[in-house]
Image (cartoon, rainbow, N blue to C red):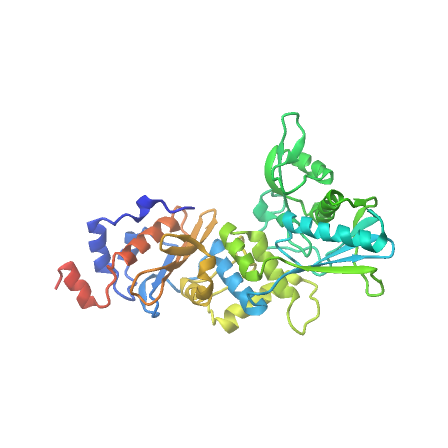
Length: 432
């Protein structure tokens, strides 16, 4: 949601005077709840760059953070994987002229990437076999065993934010389409062909257009990358005569030729997309990767559980969080809980990467929204403060609006009404 300019106009004199009376450093007075429009199940914490609490309301009470928890997910990924980490995808050509695709959880295995891979693969197939045909495509997604169950994801939903996760997923496991004038289904994005294989799935939904995710039922999403790759190979002049099937490459197999591609984007660049679009799929792909790439550990049977454990280990052992209870990494689950005080510690850890957040004027922040839940967390740039002011707003009262609270907090901070001492506050307000 964009900040409208009218939101950042100078706040009324009465509001400033009220702020002078209640925004005492470290204050926890109930007047602040009314001033900022907080409800009984809401919490707020505003902290200066020196760690001094500027204002707080119930900062130690665990709340549902919604998508704000993506800040913690990204911080954990940077810690364990490093910002320069790149996902990879491996292709093998076997002696039966079948192309094998092995995925390792790349969340940005998208049309532009697959098309570029197909161009290189097409040249390689011709050079290796002297042929313009493949006998089939085999998809190996064993690096992250299915099924992957994400708490909070609704089965039967068509919403993109409920898309399934896995080791080999194309276009966030979603398709974008529209219905042409003649009633046929066509692609709604130029870079992605709408493959015939997916059309029966679309028609079964009854939808006439938009972006929907591929159903985890009957493993539809697991086959989609192979059919999309076959379409791009066809554009590059390589036909696929045989089926697209699921299979696991075994150690006793021999590859005639192997290709391995690294993602064109680092994890740092991927997190920018995660924050820009608040993409749940990307967030939980990172959790799965944390589970899959644990050092000195065998591949876990439940990669999501392993990743969740790694996330909680980071929260408790590295950041020393006391209230965090995390069941997945996107914020879609209401079982996730964390206090404002703990989320402030996350903001400290994420500070070197705050340029990845959505920025509106002097605010850099992450939003969070579920039904009846509203949250904001981020940074306010204020001249001459020696660094950004951090803020965390968790509105768990139905009807409360974290966006409105954020605007009021930013206005109060930027107006300079938060002074260093009670004495200064008294003089400014004409009191005492």
